[in-house]
Image (cartoon, rainbow, N blue to C red; front, side, top):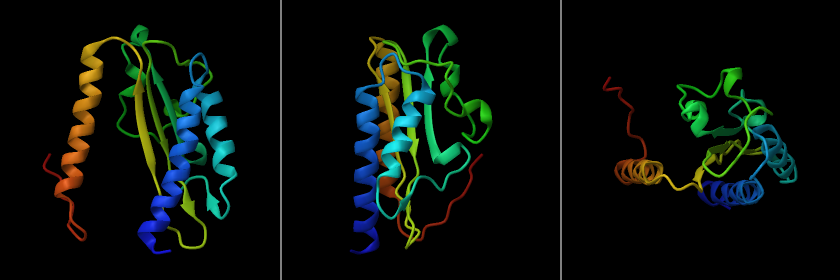
Length: 154
């Protein structure tokens, strides 16, 4: 199996684990959802849970709720402890959920990050924001080339 196939296989397994957690997220806390994801990642043979550590195990689960104006989902970095999975935040009807896992193959070091945003509420502005964000990521992927350099335009 070549490097691309290897990455895709691990990403497929990781995405299935996150999808399973998403399907059972309603009413659960971030930390409880993260424990389910970590348990699933532990079952993948020859893979490690996460290279992006902290947060612990390289697993991100953030639930932003309208009562806090979705502040939990506004971050510069996921490394500070205040953005680690917490028992204080639960997934409810109008919650925006952000998930990220960063597993890698132990033998080769090939990483297979997977992330997802979910919103099952009724606010069209939030729906549109998520759709627009996905569109930007797709546009970026379309123009990216192997070996290109990164430049900050700030």
